[in-house]
Image 1 (cartoon, rainbow, N blue to C red):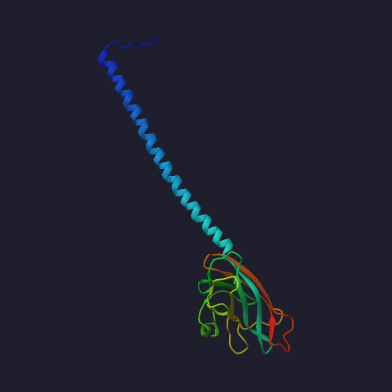
Image 2: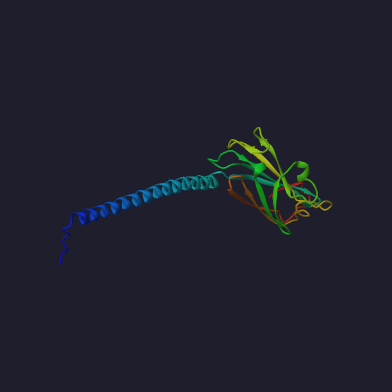
Length: 200
C-alpha cells in the first residue's frame, strides 16, 4: 500500500522538491500580499479623495438671499440675484461658476464676464458686484453679499432672451467651482404696469 524508498539518493531528491514547492508557495503568498497592500492603499486614497469631493459638493454651496428685476417698458430687462455662502462653505469664486438659464423661450449656460459683456446684445454672460464685502467675485465670509447681474433683454436689445414679460418663469441653477448646485425659480409678477422693480 505504501511505497518505501530505500535508496538514499531518491529520498534526498524528494526533500529538495518539497522545499522548492514550499519556497514557491511562500513567494506567491508574498507577492499576493504586496498586491493586496498596494490595492488597499490605492483604494483608501481614492476613497478619501472621493469623500472630500462629495463633501465639497454638498457643503460648498451658495444661498440665494433675494432676487429682483429691473422693469423697463413693462418688461424685466435685468434679473438680479443676491447671494451668500451657505453655512460651512469654503470660499466660493463666482467668476469660476456657471448659471444654467432655462427661460420661457431659451435655455443656455451663462459664464462670468465683464459688465459690458453681460449688458451686450445676445449675451450669454453674467456679472457680479459686491454688495457687502471686499471682493466682487469671491464670497469669503457668510456675511458677504454679492449681486449677480443677468441682462435678460428688452424690446430694443436682445440679451439672454428678448426680455421677461408678466407671468414668465425662469429656472436658474448656479454651479460653483466645487460642482455644487443651487436652483432658484424666478417668477415675474402677473402685472408690471407702473413698476420700476419687482421681486422675482
